[in-house]
Length: 307
Image 1 (tube, helix red, strand yellow):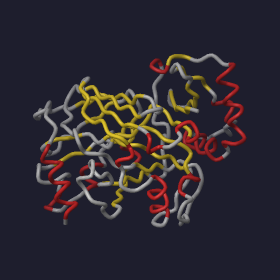
Image 2 (cartoon, one colour; image 1 turned 45 degrees about the horizontal axis):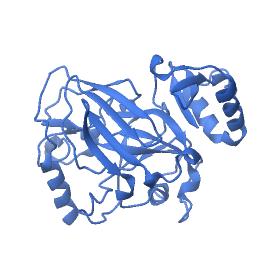
Image 3 (tube, helix red, strand yellow; image 1 turned 135 degrees about the vertical axis):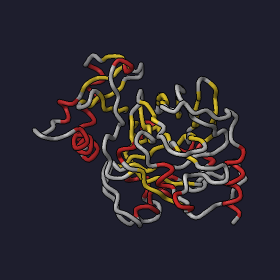
């Protein structure tokens, strides 16, 4: 099933023909509950609510998805945990240590939103197409082989990055490498358009990830190029921080095809079964960069992998 948040306070289910049906009342929110709390309650009590939502899909009328204001399907997760350098780049990069960084909730936007490039000294801004994992059960120090059991579903996620020089992947304050200052800016985490339950997705490693920039296909890679399995990622991070319902974990990307983002760009990301995440880009400084994929980025990743 596909779940979406829309129009500031509403929860919906999405039909196969991309219509959204309001089911906020079926979630039976208590007075004073905000949308994030409603979503967490739905995820936590899904076995008791699923049949009600299925009935709504059959018996209620919906409106076209593109006529509502979509929010991220998890509006305010307690954590957005992002893995980096987690793909083999088609066998060119050996397995690395698992690297994790956190993106703030303020970086999230929904489909139809705008990525705003900050007025900072950056040599370029670029995209990373990723699979987002949404946690459905509290988890702490998961045992080997149990990671898939706490996953509620999956969604599209774009990790927008600011870079200072082609020799470095992220802005470097005072000469230090910093993932935070490269990736934590407001609007730098588009997510959506909806959340798809794990049973509907099936094997996440069988999915294909595609990313278009102004109609040109830039990224197109299979999830099975990933170095560590989805279960490995969830289990590993649960030993570092306790996972809460609604937490988001992103898988990293295959970097082939990365290129610059700039003003007025139209972005579309589609992962099999997860719909199309669409955003635009705004830059008050109207900066421009060459459009060819940045081979220097890939070469830098390969060098880091060999250290």
